[in-house]
Image (cartoon, rainbow, N blue to C red; front, side, top):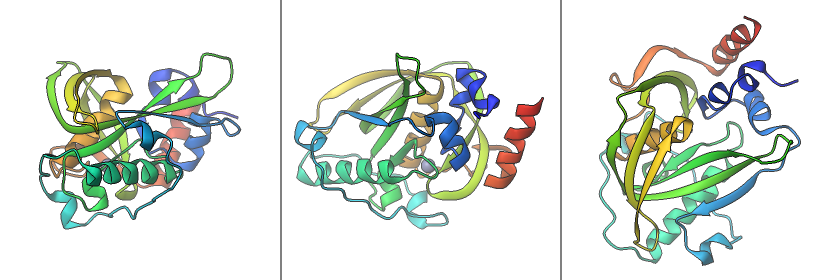
Amino acid sequence: MRYSVLGASSEMRYSVLGASSEMRYSVLGASSEMRYSVLGASSEMRYNNAMSVETILIEPHEKLHVKCEPVVSFDKELKTLVQNLLDTVRAAKDPVGAGLAAPQLGVLNRVCIARRFVDSDNDTDDISLEDRVLINPVLLKSSQEKVLGWEGCLSIPDTYVQVERAEKIKIEAYDVEGKKFFLNAAGFFARVIQHEMDHLEGKIILDEDRAVGPVLTEEEFNKMLEQKTNL
Ligand SMILES: [Zn+2]
């Protein structure tokens, strides 16, 4: 049985970053296959099957509070970092990772992955995840319209809080080969990008100018979702 809170509207369905395990099944479908694609990685990386799952730093950790340095050389080391980020975020299944930033692996460079959840065209509950590699991302525009939504973070387990984000953004960034691109994003994908770009500034969702309202544990959060479902 799917949670109606997640099934009701697509807006609600993707309204949580780092969904809990129950939500994972609601979001991804218990039996559905996750398909991955990567934008911004090099072709040899796309087909690299050697997994390298790294340890994610957990708050409180000083490296989660440092403004990161721009990438200056698009070299082999950068490709390894991007591959490690991809492998690590994909390995995060409970909760599912919506993105990951280099400082979360202890690397203080402006590199992050933002994942876009894409509905399949057919009738199944299949969701594809499109992983977008963002190097030296810069926010060019953000909409006046702000939206409040629940977020979690792989560096802050068992914690959910509401954060206000721009509904729509435009950014520029570089891919792993050093090619610049522009990206427009809206809704949940825009939220993920803003969350990850915050990490590059040393900001986390529990910061005073980010967290809005109560901070919930996963249990409290799930309870709240159930109550909303029963309304
Ligand atoms: Zn995070």
